[in-house]
Length: 355
Image (cartoon, rainbow, N blue to C red):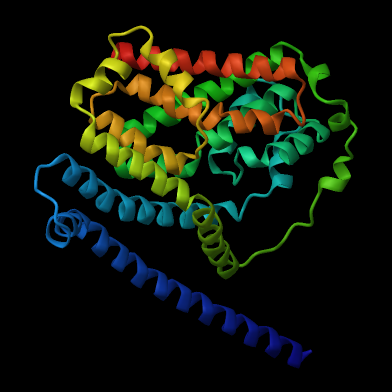
């Protein structure tokens, strides 16, 4: 008995030492992150105009400086946000999410589902297994849609990057309107009673086969979980981020101020629906599209039109519709697109009107 206690104390001390080491290295990393982040403006100017033969004030110089500045800035913000939320995500599993949402009444369930979408680690690529798990666990169809809309659109990466690049007001507006669309769309779909337009094989799936054994994690495990999230997510999205920044740099340097204002301004009634039409065929995630959003706003595009564009890219992309077709019949997909697009139109027109 005494040897068993000593063994447990020894293991506990070893875990505490590892945790202390990880926290120490993390503190050093945060200090280095903060220092590098604050020298990025000067560094991007030096790289553009001293290292490269580019004229100050030229269109090319403006684009290259934007690219050299935004690439490390966005990647550093992405690293910090993903790691922090990765630790938070270690407290959530699909099983806990399904258990929490099952049995909730509609509307209340829509609100909880949309809020859970902010912090849970799911995107449109997870749509099929999540949809099956939620339906077989007894989660109402409308509540399920609130979660599936909220998770990719109002996610922590989008909010963190928007806050870092454009300030807390834009981030708060995006979160509020995104939650409204997720709650509204899920509630409407629930009211329409379209359960018979889910593919039959989904309702026949056995929920017991979709459960997983819960893990008991220490704080050291959660820090490792956060680091694994950084490697997985940044490894998956970095190319979209670079492409998005390159597009944003081109807009920033070469597109005249008045062009974006005329296409995506608030004076033209068609600017919001046009923004949605442009966004739907595109395929990107929040991290990849936000640098484009930053450039569009900088060139005079209206906030409502830009929000509509961003939301349509994330929530109504054609690849997501292809994925959802595996579990939904065409009529339900059409209803889903129509309801979500109506919510995005409302948000776009509202903010073009009041701002």
